[in-house]
Length: 414
Image (tube, rainbow, N blue to C red; front, top):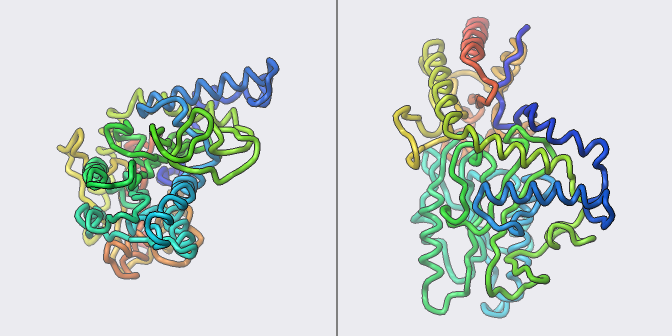
């Protein structure tokens, strides 16, 4: 039986060139990058070169890239680190009134759950709703901003429906708010989870206007177990470590690795693979966008032929849209199948060799319907009757046609 993988938004297969880039660090180059001897410095050189590669890819400074064990850890570091850093400043200025963060209702669980935990610690959380296509309302973000707001965190592109958010517009709103009289320098900070976006969209941090940005290797045909957080260096913030002026405080203490932002011996092989994956993405970003967009349209046309009542969750994609007006990621198609249970369809697809999902892999074992689809205003029936198809670098037209044939067999059998 042919196996067809259409769950690339959950994780991507390791690219062969990425694997080759990692292999030396499983063999002779095994030193600890914090060691001063030759073995250690060989490993340090690999980490430094990788950091430089990723920094250049997003237009950041070398010391602004902090490696973590995952995107989830990076998101936690962004939110918790920003709150911890701002605590003394904001508490003294606002007579003990709670600090505040602003997020959307369709963020990744690592943002939503962290926000809930911070709420238990006394932080106010403003949750901005989205339209039925998954787009956040910038005006509602502007209305939620006040002098107690430490951080705004809005994901660049959603992992379940692919909707791209107006990050530059949000950044400009925050910039205008910062410019008010007697405002604290640099607050509110602006964070974006760009895990899904990096593969297809411009992630230059200055152009976007973000202060913190999360990346992940295993969404880019790199290895699992490594992520990165971009942390903008400011010129005059109260918290300073050595020659690094930061806007967050570390959440893991120890040996002071990653410029004091994330202690723990670096995963040299994974970091080297991360950098190679970033390099390969840069070489084919635009062409892959267009190729996958055509595959997505081919899949959607086939689904409509087999199941005319099927409905796209999120934004429809116009094949003529290019450049900065891209409305949605090209590789994600989230579909509602009326009168069908998504879980049953998922299992049936798997029995025919087709790997799809009902939403985020991080919530796959939860019996609850997708929080993203519920946030779009859909009831449990629609959320529970939907599937996410996500294409990748290795997806072919024949595989798309195979998935359509499998759907025909599944629906005929039910």
